[in-house]
Length: 229
Image 1 (cartoon, rainbow, N blue to C red):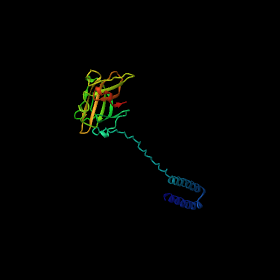
Image 2: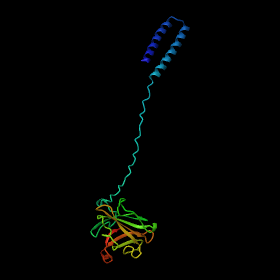
Image 3: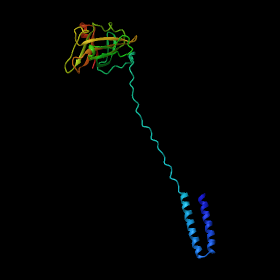
Image 4: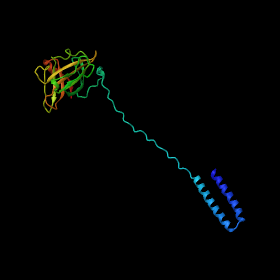
């Protein structure tokens, strides 16, 4: 609207000045002409400045937050429920000995045997030879009262280590001072038990590849394989 008003004013100025020109001399005509030129130039510049369109607004893009990977949390097995414990991978990891079902849980090298269930009532942390590393192997059982009933000092234990072709076969509960250091059963609930075995390592780098149990030395030919790699 302001631009239109200015253009009307300039037009009226032309008309008025034109009337004046008709009645004035040449000098006055020159002054009037210069004045009109200046007014015209000013009006055009103001009109151009007024009508200059503003640049369109630039859209601001908000970057999407980068996706943060969700860590995968492995749940701790419920060692108070035999049916919910998945046996560790092995060619033999589930077996029945004296009508008790066993599942192989894990094998590790360490100076201590620690019950799988931290709330175990009879199984306790045990250390052999003042911190000497042993080969420790853990089993779950579906019967809790297995100590001295299912597994005892008469149990014939055959453990096979591997390091090339070398193997060891041992008898009894440390009766001959051999590599067998002992085993015990941990009772936690009315229905679930645990049998943990620990053996001195004959040579560095060796591991257990098989564990068998028999009721006695006389029955060793009928030994049951609880674990085989």
